Image 1 (cartoon, rainbow, N blue to C red):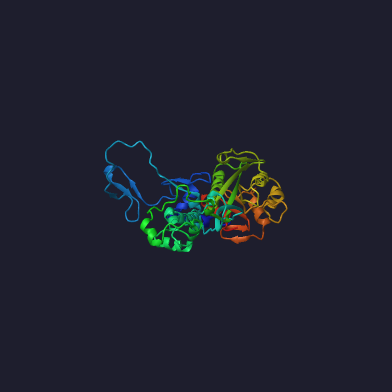
Image 2 (image 1 turned 90 degrees about the horizontal axis):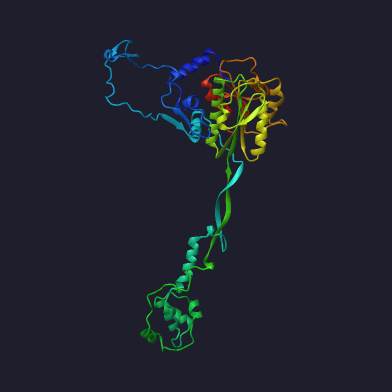
Length: 439
């Protein structure tokens, strides 16, 4: 992290702690369990702050209470509080755990750090269909039920009348189809003119309509005949339209950890927290997040999620071995045209010989033929004890990209970021540097 060092930094850290300790989110980041980034991060309730704030210290019951604070002098005696009521002690543990989902973690981090990373959709997926037309044929799933029912009813209603009554009326002497149609409608018979014309009987049985009505009366039944189905094929209408394609924001996060002999203890813990929480943020932002885990000394190995943080340390350091392994995995399983890629690495800054200049820097440089395409390359140099003369990887990256933009969160150039971590208080600023806004 490119920030002030020494006494001033320690003073700033003390003042921030004295104002109330770490923020709630910082507690999750610094003191929470190292859970997989796709899962909730958990923290036990009541985790200690970094300094001891004023409070009460209880002496023996009969002596009252010794108080530390602004208003009373140390040693003053006040009435002791009542003890717990008599009874058997409980034998079940209490639930004092808090947790944050990746989505809530990302939202909180956006709020506190002012981040606003907008996930990019590289692939498209069909979310729905926008129906803009109708057709007479199609799959049952696209059947326009309301229109089909309306068409069927329009056709069926004219057939749902007393057909015998209507046919009998056509036998009135001197009547024609149009006259019979009008008379039937005046009797409340829902018949169509087409039906009357198709069923007109050229036979005279009644002198006039009065004579007909004296001998006939329409039935109250308007049901469709039993041999007539309620809907026909030509009643059916199907919806037609174009599929709506939405961007599918997929991300793969490559976490690479130096497991050489110098990377034990606090170095490993700080590295895992920077990598894990940065990946958790991305898991909370993207629709689909996958994670690749690589450890390396002089050779690199892909690891499982649980195995990643448990590999024993040992051996020398060739950092490019991890980048070479990352390239193989990304090109085989996560093509740049379809996936957002983030390539993150953490170590103590040591690397063998000219490996940084010859191999790593060209992979980070988008103008190089050896470039490993990624939304962002980021490296965290973790040195709890401060400077290390043999730790020059971070310095080499900065010197190579000498036109990088200077920002309060660290130094970066477009898709390259470098952070320095010396204590737990540097983890959150390192995450900010790794993410660095929209890219």
